[in-house]
Length: 120
Image 1 (cartoon, rainbow, N blue to C red):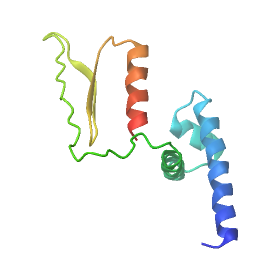
Image 2 (cartoon, rainbow, N blue to C red):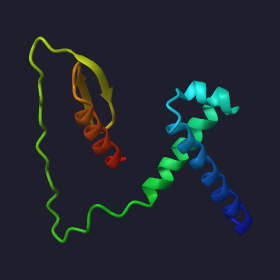
Image 3 (cartoon, one colour):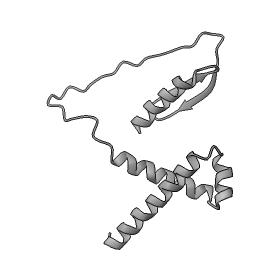
């Protein structure tokens, strides 16, 4: 890729980063914000994905090279809510499933979302 294309791509990424920050501070839905700002929703989500990928590429490595060949194993935790509580929201991801029960505190939901965000 030539230098001009790299500069152009970096400029567009910075432009869209600012647009997405503007949306996030607007307290509007994506649809309403896009309509108000003349942005196609498809473009918004396209650039949001590109920005997230770029941000993940700049994260420091979370794991150093292990000198032994034994893989680390993690225990799977099964958390079951009481029988009378049903999940209001269920999120299935390739690497995790999250069920949020009615009445879950905002702090708990934010902590879970931050943990999932850090996984990328």
